[in-house]
Length: 73
Image (cartoon, rainbow, N blue to C red; front, side, top):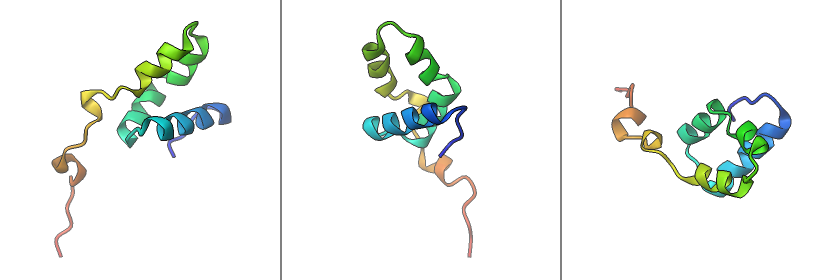
């Protein structure tokens, strides 16, 4: 798991990643954008959580990016 500032934030990101099926890139993006803190401060938490489940184009991993350093035996 990617490090978070608090245990509560870690539990939040873990639950949301499982619920939303987030790939690692989306999880890191959400942590870096402080999604937990923004959701906690938001008045409309339901809409914030809905926005967080929508993946962005940058979250997609291409085969080339996945195999950046292939091993040759």
